[in-house]
Image 1: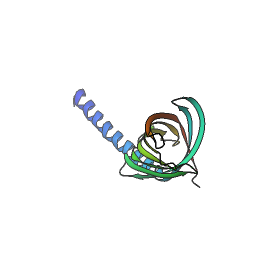
Image 2 (image 1 turned 90 degrees about the vertical axis):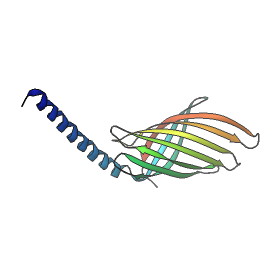
Image 3 (image 1 turned 90 degrees about the horizontal axis):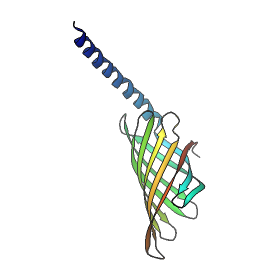
Image 4 (image 1 turned 180 degrees about the vertical axis):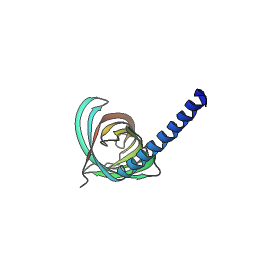
Length: 158
């Protein structure tokens, strides 16, 4: 067998073995990253500058296959609003990507619409987020934009 054919077969065998290894790894990750997952959101930046705000939230994650999942959330912030979020996830190592769209319904009838990207380390399920929002104020009938970013830390669900 000539060297070129041998290396070609060896490369294809390595690629096939690698694909199986990564698929198996993602299937294990899909089992870990599923069900109810609770997080502490630490907002460190808003469009106005640095902040130090903390909220908790719960995601329900459902894997569709070894590399894709869907996520949804409904959280109530006491005396303020309901937060509805839905989106998709890409499972992978070393990073899980979540892209979410969300709405906040405030007690004053204000409504916010958001787009959020979350990046989580597949080993710890902790990570970062960035959020862009359009906010409607019913008393002034105005819309303005807002931004926030920060970290997410996985916590035990209550």
